[in-house]
Length: 357
Image 1: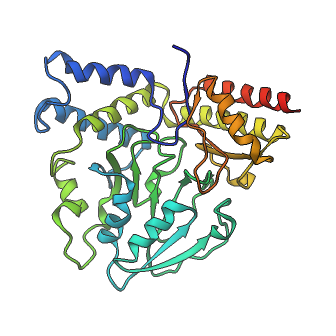
Image 2: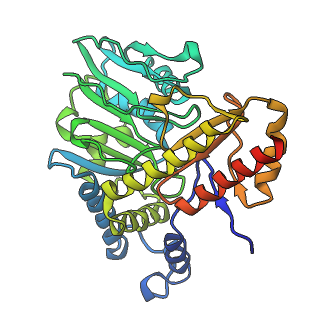
């Protein structure tokens, strides 16, 4: 079978070794004669998986003892309402940055629980840049960021300095670069970009910010209950957590976050250079705010976009059609995507450019 180069935005590429180990575990987990899909979540067999997955998160993110690691059901969209439910009282104010579809969805949900001040927005330019100059109200309970915007291809290169609690949706760039993760009081991320399959959500939370709201929080929505039960308050998504553990093991074996960041920087720089050098293509994002995870670009002649899609498809490129809100193309360069796949796409861009010159 010809090579396939997977640039999908999510669910997305995972390391081949992870697929191999996970597929074996479905048939026979650790020579138990049982599938990973049928072992009890409260058995020692799965407790080891959960413990290792959480420990790897703490190690790779270099988290301090104040921060707890949770694996919860659902995706980041669940956190759009669970965050304010736990952190924001009815008459209190939160601060949100509006840098794309997912941040605007988070804003919408937060308004159900308290006041929301949108401190900056790039909506007027179709979210093609990250705002730089804005003020955060002193009384805001937290400042919410979406660190990488999957649809529009922008990324916060510098995390704002603020005395307010920092909350971040890191779904599409978690574990892709070195950040002071301890500077955040709450981080959440759907797994299906850089960490595992869809259906599980990573939450990292500073336990000292919890228990401050007056409202009664439903048992299953209260982070404190999940901390107390070690992410076992109810049956966790066993297989999804297991695959996350395998992916985190792989990341550690690559040298950790700092090592993978160097590779990610190289992949992104190569692809952006090829786009900028071609007279047929143009990037959609302000150069200083370009995402290293999601490279968005269009053709100067839109009529050539479908022929280009068909051309690269013939050479094993999948998943680069852009989101309908941006158009054009989106190449997602997540941790598991090898440089060789980026090199193939770059050569195809150059070949297509020569054909049309």
